[in-house]
Length: 306
Image 1 (cartoon, one colour):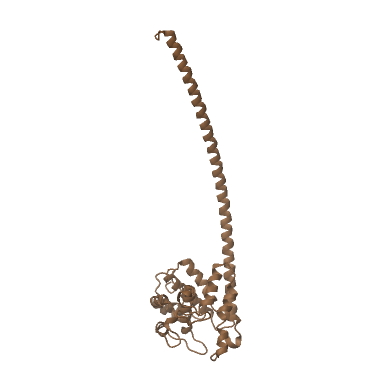
Image 2: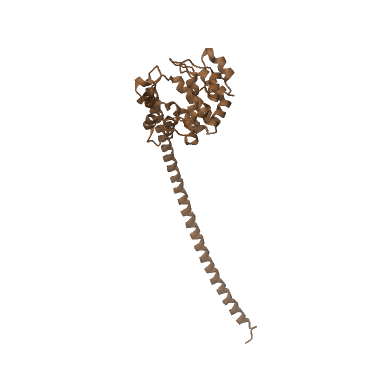
């Protein structure tokens, strides 16, 4: 066969061209299928994205509503705590200023120990509930001017358990902190406290904090059966003991913190007089300024730096 025949060459070329056109047509069909598939996928992704945006918007609304509900519930819990605190004060000699000072002492210690602003604020709000269980102690014992006998003291030692029972059973972090404080603020680091005789790290930190804060203010405050003591005397009692109070009662870390913070304790006590006013009285403003170690008005609980 003569392979140089022009007609045959033309026919062969036409055949190859037809095959190429068929292949191109197939490629075009496959490409169109890929484009259509990708277009459909893009549209589906766009629709899914829009749906996700709608879900996210709805979820944010639900989250914001739940957060607001939680905040309102926490405020209700706090209001309840305040009312319980006020009710317990009718049966005890503690003043509103004592409770206010206690909150500031406890918050100051919590911040120094690095617990964070949120936890410190929780402790600030919960600390005044430490003695709420005294509402269940008979007046004849609670208001007795002389020393308690053994049986009376046994009844008095139940007030942490009573307070904890009043505050238990809630998922509120505030009420849980208040319950821990009420139950453990009379426990001693060396195990000599009550009601459970807990020792060392067995005692929740919030209980250890409020123990020291409450002891400082109790020693500073006058009562019908005793005078209030000066700051230096109270520091010496807490750090070195006096026969009744002993440094082994307190967490060593908290004693170190108290050494560092004692001037702030003195300033808080000077500024928050038993009138319950959260600002320095006229005759104590200079004392507050001399004692206060805060660097700005925003940090100072009593406004001595204003």
